[in-house]
Length: 337
Picture 1 (spheres, rainbow, N blue to C red):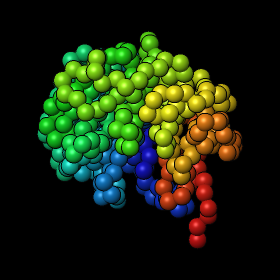
Picture 2 (cartoon, one colour; picture 1 turned 180 degrees about the vertical axis):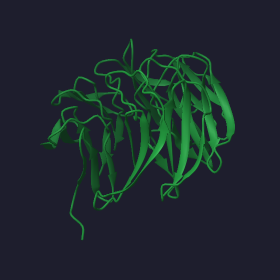
Picture 3 (cartoon, rainbow, N blue to C red; picture 1 turned 90 degrees about the horizontal axis):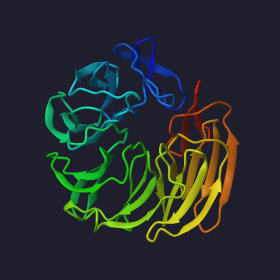
């Protein structure tokens, strides 16, 4: 499933995964094109599926718009759960949990997090975000010490919520104002990793087992050199790996924050990293794919040009890599009958 926008129309597309054939395309929303940042688009939010339905999110002028479709392209419901205003445009990717579609409504106004009923779109809970500041981070859901947490950065903070109720569990102030990259969690080390932002750039490792304000007690390590603003990082084995927007990549020991290396990759980077089969995949804005094996030394396994510009993050399924370029969708891997 892909989303796209053109001439005021936001659409959802279904493609056959093995051939790339477009099975259907449905116009989800018709609305004026909002003002956006030069690195944004009018269809930046990634759709999500539970295997039966697919859920999408766009901006309808001054309101968040969320809709559900079945796999035949039939609209099941649509809703506008709250206002939204940002001079940089919209990108709030929905996530699914326990019968709910949860969407980040951080914006330059009365910001919120909202959980919608997967079957009807009705609002189940809605939680205020007090700092009224835009962010573009997708929440992550992880079970930590037997408790499910929904964690995201944004609104001048890093915060954890109970995804069933929307109640805040813990919060860390800052460390900056603007957030784009999503968090990652290392299950073995029980550490949460953050890279941000604007105007200051930081990397944090956070122990996610507290309650209340844990700013002074739960930051395990911190660094500032080589932090990313837009591309989301990954954890791979014992390593925390990221690439800054200018193409400088870094590999850290996840537990301690020791930096193994800091090296430049070709071009700038906007796409988030992908970790698969013990390797990390980097995709530059010019479409150069670098495959790196994390470790003490900078080990580039492969480096290949796609042939066109890329802004979208890569995806992987069934030993195949999917890359969305400026003009084409690519499937890379062994050919199947």
